[in-house]
Length: 228
Image (tube, rainbow, N blue to C red; front, side, top):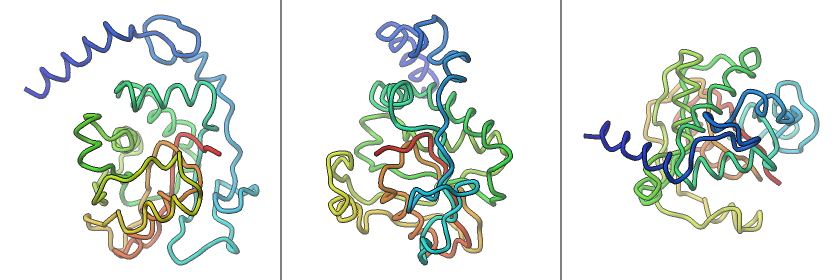
């Protein structure tokens, strides 16, 4: 039944939003190879202070008890990348997540740390029902297949929160305080935490904190884009 509904959803989406490159309108794919190759890469930097860093490692002076070991970012959240992510999330085109997930695994093949499992930032049950999928889970599953490392649903979001984009830095921290809980077995595991966009790092920090409190030895981050 799920397969039938998924096929029907794809057919409807193709009628409403004909499949063509969101960059150049070339038919057949949501993102052609040429446009993908032209997306400017984000510089590797410490996600806390934004200063240059090898492979996105968190500087020792910026490290806290629960911070990420590193954060790898593909691009800045603007232009074509912003359009792709918004179409992926809000027009429910999950295929874009598979394209971007495969690209993340490919471009960071030499830089991804050795991990025991891949996990993802959860969304609330209400958002999951509305959207039909968790964009970060799709990315994580795609990356997991590419790097041959199991994906584990290690976190849950206990309630629906306000949209982070409309809040100040202080409000973002309060908005997400205590809303994530660890539910998977991560003790003594090295974890790769996947999300679509990182802006202030609040979401990733809160998730990393819960994973570390549950016993994860290290938590690394991987996102498509960094916002301002």
